[in-house]
Length: 117
Image (tube, rainbow, N blue to C red):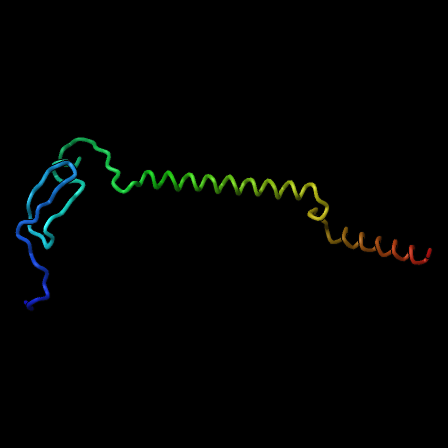
């Protein structure tokens, strides 16, 4: 082994669990704090226990609320666009034939106005 490259090994590392259980082991750290140990883990105790250490349920609930809000906003925008399209002439779908007929009619009107003046 090379000298001075390895971390110091503590022969008595105290591990403390959230349930209050403590035991000693060997580690490079002087002490370790854990949330679940063999004394309180459901697999070893046979008791069902709900553990949400990282707030995963809260995080999921927040994401779900944000998604629902975005969905509502999108639906509102969709309904606004539909109401604009129905009430306005410029959003009306027109075929090419109808557009050409309208253009010819406007040309004829402008030509008649010029002739009458």
